[in-house]
Image 1 (cartoon, rainbow, N blue to C red):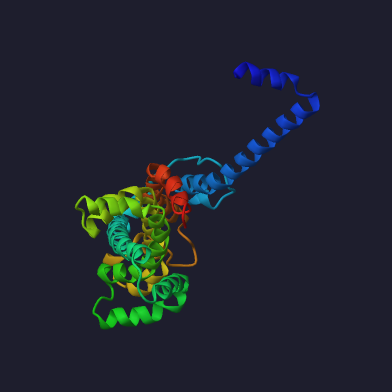
Image 2: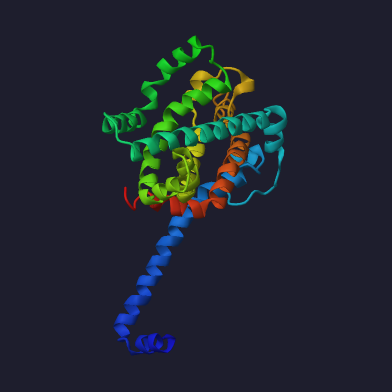
Length: 291
């Protein structure tokens, strides 16, 4: 087979071979440009966090003349950024676990059961997700204050769930539809309950989709700023994006600590996407089989 392909390439006209080489070169050039556009801001953020203040405001350079970790020292010792990272981890993990569990039950019921207004419920869920956050943060802040959940991580988790649950439910419906109903029926014939069929058949077979939904939910909770800015007033309850926002206290931006905070805040998401990239690729396509 290799010999045949080589013979075909040798037998190809010079013009066609030249166009093939030019096409490949253009493809790689476009890919390299795309990679550069993605990596350049990350690289610039990282090297800026290692520069002295006087060097940051000079002519931009691709490498710091003097490498310093003082910006990270300011961030962790003076600004107590570790506490903000801890709060973000608590909120993001709690929102992800609760949202995936509840949305799995909701999506399964909408896919497998037939009841009145099922289609209406699906449209309402989608409408709730599409509603802009800027229209709801004032009513939500009033509601949280009346419930005694203002300025707390519990209240922030509850508010984030109002936005993550609709998206998770909508996405999981597509993944659950791709699981054949006959597998659940066979499992229930063998003695499984409805919940047993869900958690022992549907959920394992939908694992890539559930992983993708979990990553989307975690990322949304980790990066959210507007609701945290409205609901959180205590320094001890600030999340990472909110703590970064409060680093700006005057007209002169502290670019060194800001970039250091951006690097530290980006690391958990980078690690998460790097570890789970295989599940992301599978999950992005899993729900399209019978969606």
